[in-house]
Image 1 (cartoon, rainbow, N blue to C red):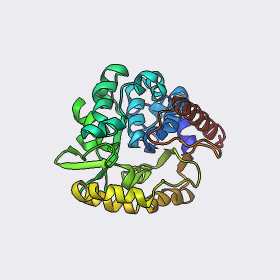
Image 2 (image 1 turned 120 degrees about the vertical axis):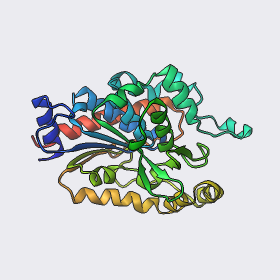
Image 3 (image 1 turned 30 degrees about the vertical axis):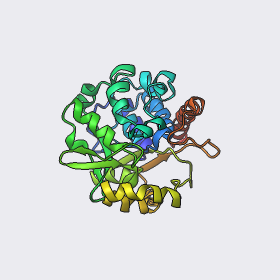
Image 4 (image 1 turned 135 degrees about the vertical axis):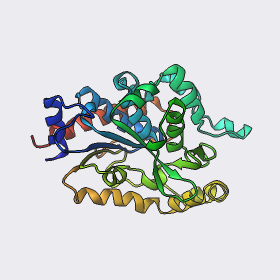
Amino acid sequence: MTVADVLRARREAGSRPGARSDGHRVALAIEGGGNRAAYSAGMCLAIDELGLTDCFDAVYGTSGGALNAAWLLTGEAQRWLPSWASPEVAAAGVTDPRRLLRGGPVVDLEVLVGHVYERLTPMDFEAILANPITLHPIATDARTGESADLAPHLTDRVSVQTALRASACMPLLAGRPVPLGGRTFVDGGLSEAVPWPTAVAQGATHVLVLRTRREGQLPAGSRLERLALAPYFLRHARGAGRSHRVRHEHYRSTDAARHESAHLTQVRPPPGAHDVSRLTKDLASIESAIAIGHAALIDALSSSPA
């Protein structure tokens, strides 16, 4: 059975997470990419509108994808996922280059989880913890450079907030690595930008993968970026620095596997979809990406064989 087949069968049967009888383990794996995750936000919005959220057994997310995964499991996805394009959220100052002048991070994830997710768009962390669908934020171990599933650390409100910060901690831009469970972590995109490999390794038989880059679009990077990041990695995250150098190879490997598994379906922004930079403040661009991602998900599942 394809991913779409299993999702439809579960929805029609009223199958509930934690009480399955079909023998499958179905995972959702969500790519991030800063504000480019607006594409996967639209896809998650469509999943929830189609009544498919409860058809998954686990949700894996990297960076901005982990944020979307968390929203999906709160039960309030339709209310808050569009807030990627909210002027009020944009005005909160999660991203502010002027902080560099005071020695602060360009992207302050404490503002995101401690202010935005507490006061502006309240995230129900208790609902995430209580949900039988498990949340798996993916981060990069700063010391080893290996990808890490932070799910075992999710025990209370603060630990969920910390794990989301760790998964999205862009080197240099978001400050020092985030400590959690005796280790430190940076952005999961360095080691597992598209987190389906961890889902498969943990027993997923079917994976729906939400992508934020078009077919053939690779992570951006330059010699100047590598030079700028080198002191950060040397001081704070040597292993993650090694992962950063080979991240293109990591990313290509996630593409190649789509030809090898009948039980892995990937949904992407369509050809011609506009680029959304990870730090953009263009709310019209973000809002358009949400709409494009929403349409792409619906089209992908509706065009799958019944």
